[in-house]
Image: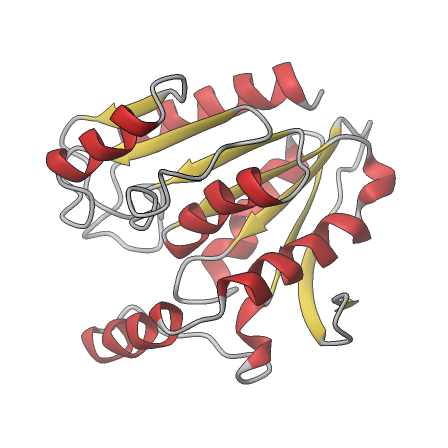
Length: 219
């Protein structure tokens, strides 16, 4: 579907709807690779659980339909892209997605990688029923922000972008935010499309905890 942000920018979004009763809605914030097959599969998963799920194409401000592969060269390009991004614009595009599914009821935000950082920032600067951050590497640098809604974080113990010292910084600043650590799991452990990073046990447990959290705060 096509969205419009408050500044007039138009962007695409992938939308997945439940086949039965709607529990609420979820905005899915992309990895640094864009709205690719993996991110669409995440939307489909949560739609199957009863949530209207929408993933806005944040990179449309640079190039419509832009995604990166998981190759080393594209990994480096994706890092260059997201680290230079205007975070306020990204949050505005996420809000456009939230507003597009407002009739679903209460709305949560879930983010992965870059989106994990955006989920935390959205919890602090926007209005959501709750937020779930998966391995948001920027959250220690944004730990001084204050969340407006309940938040949980999922981080792999082998995540080189979030070593123990950086996780400790976030925990010290936000002692009331649960941070779940997953033994043996690297950055990107939820992503079944990346066999070298996918960690099935962490994937299952994090999704179980996420569903429990959503049931409590969304429906």
